[in-house]
Image (cartoon, rainbow, N blue to C red; front, side, top):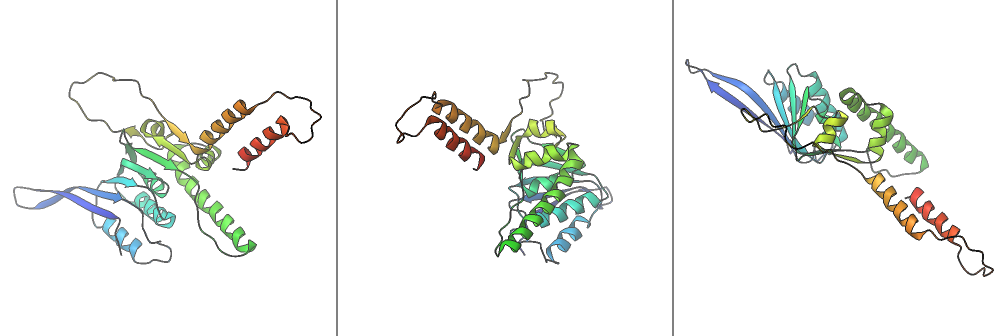
Length: 251
């Protein structure tokens, strides 16, 4: 079993020489479960045992491109069920399945240089049309379960969240806070500093919107005034435009 998580505990020693754990930190780095947790009774139990080995509030640092949605779902449930407060801090990227885990935080903080990405679940299927339909239905169910986590945290409508997932949406720190996926942007505390600093700028990248914008620009440059011609061997401008929009709609 290759562990993708690591615990670190900070301890203090009192005057009597007794050690006391004052803070527990969980680091989730890299792919969330390189091997699927599906039908795995060992790995989830090890993770849960380590999570419940102590008590009190915990901090979870996430820097992961995502991974197995089954593992992410179970980790999310374990963190949601944990008795203490769970502070999630994203210091690099929380994409795909990792973004689902982040939603379990009592408080979610994002580094000003971090990114969050959400998208539709994907799988590999093999078989006839019936098997393909089963895969489609399974992916729809998985998406619904992911939407539950996003909806609880952000308060956004399922339709809005579904659209963001369809578009494979990337969010910078400010946009993640703006949309409710995070609670605050991490800042270095400075004593006596009251300067509000430069205005915040939030950025959101959607692959679908970029493609649509590019296709619209190409269409604008390729637009040709309609002309009447008797030469049937020439391709009409309207036909070219129809083909261009067909490519756009069926990409």
